[in-house]
Image (cartoon, rainbow, N blue to C red; front, side, top):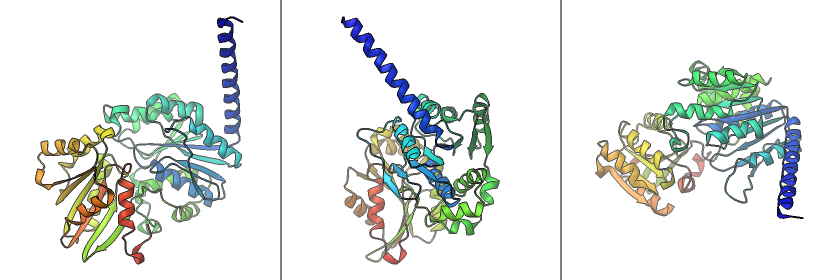
Amino acid sequence: MSTLGLLSCLFVTLVALGLLEDRRHRAALGRIPVRIHVNGTRGKSSVTRLIAAGLRAGDVRTFAKTTGTLARVILPEGAELPVFRPAKPNVSEQIRIVRAAAATRSKALVIECMALQPYLQWLSEARFVRATHGVITNARPDHLDVMGPEEEDVAWALCGMVPYNGRLFTAEQDHLPILRAAAATRGSEVVAVGPEHAEAISDEDMAGFPYAEHKINVALALAICEDLGVARATALGGMHAASPDPGAMTEHPVDFFGRTIMFVNGFAANDPESTEQIWNLMIERHASQAKKIAVFNLRADRADRSRQLGEAYVNWRQADAVVLMGTGTYLFARAAVKGGIDPKRIVYAEDQRVDEVFETIVGLVDDSALVMGMGNIGGDGLDVVRYFRNRQAPQRRGA
């Protein structure tokens, strides 16, 4: 057989295998009647977990996958397993997740969108998930190098995963017209969850969470659960009992040789708007702390994020000290100093080990301090959280 003939046979074989693979995947999707695809700038992992927990409490056999701080699958019984990745993360792993969900005879799949590139967001929805319910938590300025350059472009990029002929739930308000326009082209209905829905979540409702959760996330998850027939009280009870994402905002009080430190894990809030909101909330909640120390974990491969945070921090309520850890810290420092921040308040901890970062932070505390981690949970962010948590008074643990 000639070379051309061999190539033709190989091409035909590959096409046939591709068609067979597509048929198997569609068959797996068909065995899962409810498919919920969760996307957005902030809160994806939390909302994914909340929805799955609410559905489980309502006796809906549910399989879930998050790709937040640590990629996890959540089995119908609530047990968690790490996502096996032989190489770098790839959106095609969603195919394995769909098959796993079908193999467990799950009636619902709640899956976090792991794509950033606009085309890959469309591919994830149109080919891999084919959701009955889409979720866009919000659209804020982050990953502008991929989805930007402007915040409005981020909203358009997220629209790539709007479902076809389904329902799109969203808590986004500023760019709601964009989401409505995208949904209209795909025959989907938009269900907007606004501030009034968040206000309907009482403080007593929120007190049931053993970690700091946002009312709007809970309201969004409840709206979906109720749409699928799970009573509000039942869904909320399930959410209270669920395990949080490892990057969930938690507080860890530490007594270090007479120095009182309240460490707040805000590392996962990596866009400027969300981060400032949490920073202000923590300052008000812990106003009695003598010092305020902001810790930014930065990454050289997230250069745009570092610059955005540095530029934004200029207009925030100022900390007594700003500790910069991770890599590429000069990007944040240059933007902040250019905006008018006193460079003497900046403490550099780049490339320090976690124990050295801890020593740097506690060395800034005389009596008491609020210390909040921000920027990136990746890198050493999660390890810093663990370091403080492991030094937390046993009777105060719960995060």
